[in-house]
Image (cartoon, rainbow over all chains, first blue to last red):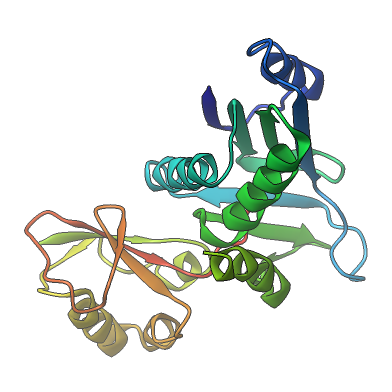
Length: 153
Length: 79
């Protein structure tokens, strides 16, 4: 099972976990990651975050990432949810869940999907803070995290 | 004619850019835009900016077919 959703609505972590858990009796490990809206690097609290994406292309890129994860690890199911539109501090932004027989596959695949999502999927964040708006810059640390998997090829 | 899309910070520089343009490669689009919109031109010359045609990342010298969707993509910041 591979599930990809891009949506404005919030998601229910418990429900997503149950979907992965109940995929089959062979599931022995479920790893889930949830990304939240937080303050930005010591510049004080933000008012909101707006997520833009490239409809069509984003889905295609996420599918490629999930396909790669499935070819690298033995997975029984993956689920990716990314929210778009206006979000507030503490809101959930992104969910990655992976089910597998053994924990190493699920741990590594979940991290791989997040690392690739952050550096390859066509999403852009804009911050609103004290009446000002600015686009978030990409981080070298995210590139390095993603590059690590490429070096393993 | 090909259709143009600008994402992220590039959109802020492209508010007055026409929705479509006559050009044979993304590199040529970049030069045409730089002539009329120098700030956008400078942004498009940033080495991290990628270009896609019909939702596939391509080189700046990719030949464009009539009606293609050409998108300019700054570094992504999702997740």
